[in-house]
Image (cartoon, rainbow, N blue to C red; front, side):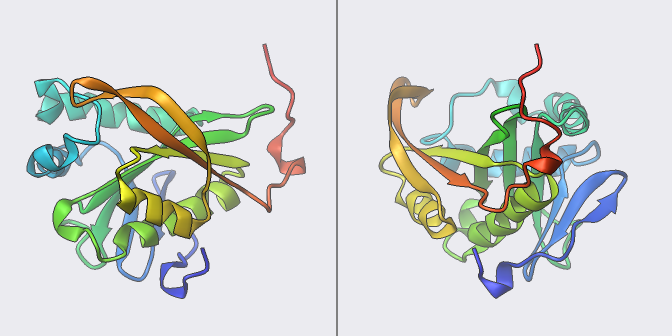
Length: 211
């Protein structure tokens, strides 16, 4: 978590949405206008993601689908329900997406937690880019959004995810049997979590569940 090359600059404001720069990457929040690049990212990685992702309908690969999904992404950010980053190479912000990082299922009150998801273009694997992106994004979620806990799961055979999460400090908490439907069957997932040791309980605005 202390890799100097992965330490981000302070997030910049972009129409109220976060933007993070690292040594090699720019993380911008998903927003309308990114439809074509998002479709292209998933289309060229269709077979690459298939073994590890839940099934999607064919419309998932259309601009029409992402036109609505990107509007919802902004709405979810405004409602403090999710944060979704698109990754591009530094100096090539208008270029293709190289990966995506999402923090969904944000809960406040006594939980103060979220769930991490991430995907990287197959041609950029093995370069440390996802570790760099996750280090910066997690710092944002802990320092700027003041979350206490981030959960992440992965298929037992996915050793790339196992290594990057361990390097980030995530600790294995157990194995969820038949957790997600992937590749035509229910699949087990290793469950991990990272706790924010600098969580500011006073800034949390109260930890009592509402309703």
